[in-house]
View 1 (cartoon, rainbow, N blue to C red):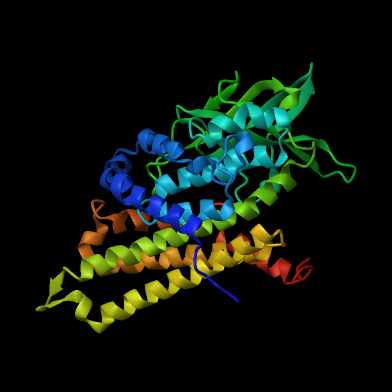
View 2: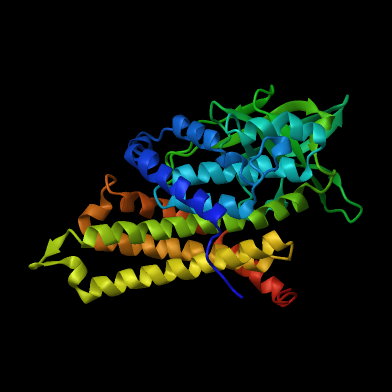
Length: 388
């Protein structure tokens, strides 16, 4: 029997995060967003709630939950604000998960307890200034010298990389050549206080203005050889597997934003009057909101299915790409429609839909652009080798 109802434990978590988002995030996040300021107190509260440790076992300081619990939390946070949601998503999926999946026991015990408690943040440095979606074009390099990795290069658009509580950045770097002549790419943990590691000033962004994003530079940056994460030469492959899970997480954030647009519009059209009636009485408005709800509902089903396959241990690459593509499209379309319904007020930052509109576009770009998702889906369908 197919049953899409959440069990009691999932529902209790969802409700707890929903209450937190509306009672503690919603009243203050607009001012953080306007000031482009990182919300340390909100992050600390999420840490005390156990949100950063949701999918990790208790042996490393986690809550003993699973990835779907994280996805539910992300959706509820993004219904109110995406900056807070993406801070959690990146902290777990990109900061802590690679260490949990590929780290040694020593690495896990050193880093994960603080990351799971939200007392520290980790980041993952993959994207480079000239690379974009072509992560295989990595130029950052690392060589072994006197028992240390010596790293040189730069990374771009790295979330959670420059906060006061950032403890580490895991970076991909070229560490040699394979027998085929291709680059050997490995992942290396770089503590944030390492000499030669420089964090550039924060970006001036269109959206996600209360989240932390920086360009990073490495100049003869030295870390112990034991800071290699996983197997040498497997860094790129490791991160691709992390991205598959991360795409479901971004889909959950997208669904949250899409649902937030519906929520805000339902409140607004019940109050706003035009031409003698509440604007919710006009069929044009009703149909627009109905379409928004359809997009949200469909996108949620897509990420639920991808999450179900992940939890069952089945291949889920195609489903993750579909969920990310459908959900990010829904978020962008709903944000545009919500702004239209709000009219001039939708263009004002004091209203959440203005923030949603600015935040939605990056969901079609981050953790694999929409074009990359279509490429992945095509490959999973066997459509390869058609272009020379």
